[in-house]
Length: 446
Image 1: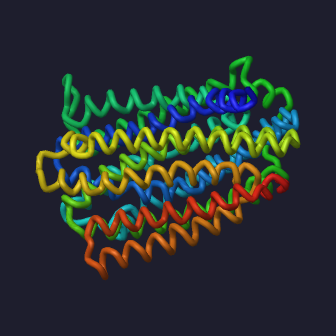
Image 2 (image 1 turned 120 degrees about the vertical axis):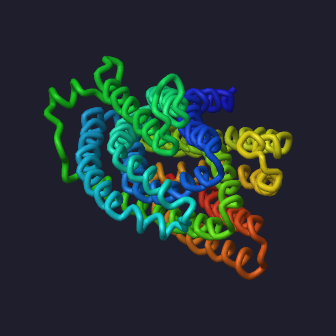
């Protein structure tokens, strides 16, 4: 009965976040699918922008994760005013920083994509797509800060709703603008980028409007009534947590970028298949990410209320649910290995490459979802230095070294790329799992 109580609460918090992350990833998957009608070069071009885009977002991902953990703690302490001031402070920091980061990335887009491994077939398409995406990043940032605050307060449904609608808007305008349907101009890759930004714009409006609901813990009315502005103290809290999470993200992106550059050098067809594989990995990641959100909110609230045993139980429950999900995903991948890639490509050689990639994905998703949830519980407790060290060692060094060794020394091609990914996921699973099971993380203070 007790176990059912934790499962019920975890699922109640998790399902909107799981679906939110899933629809975000699904939108990227559908972007790739709809662009694949143009050809492998278009798929590869969009794939080139993935890691640079996430490097640009690393600042804001760090702020969002920090805010979610801090708001969860403040709610556990029943301090609604400070929870809202945390969001306000984070929003001011994020908007100013976003304008600066966007400008830098737009100016240096050609150089960034060259560094990412662009070729004559993919460079111009990638530059166009990336500039539009970065120009619209401000909408993503606003949505991230508000939604992360709402998630920390236990309201995960608003994130699900905004991202579901955003994905639908994205898909509709993909249909209209990529191939010029229903009288709209045929814009190809440019149309896909515009559709993505429009989806982000709608999500930002919906997230902001959530602050005006009477039932919302994060409340514009409270912010205005109490005149909540920027707080130096809260800024230091965000900086303390966020700096480590930011370094962890950057460390991760360096490893991911090494993988992407190495894969790009294998040729356009292999890189196109690799990017579809990464979209599948992103879809599986979405389930782990959703469960991580539940782990952050539930363990953070329990720790804020000084219920350490409950924090551990919620962490374990989220892990059990995540493991069940990963087994289901692996079974689906086993059954539909080649069929998935036939949705994107007609060339049997590319489909065969995709089948090889899916074989590795079957095992990777099991380790990936588990390690994401372990990491979420540790970050909610403020154990960000350890998670940083794990990312630095596993992704930046182990993954990069393994990938380069398997591809450049053993000449394993695309298999070497995914063996490197597997090595990284297994090492993070072991390191974060052991830390979680020790249980010392519940004694940390933030």
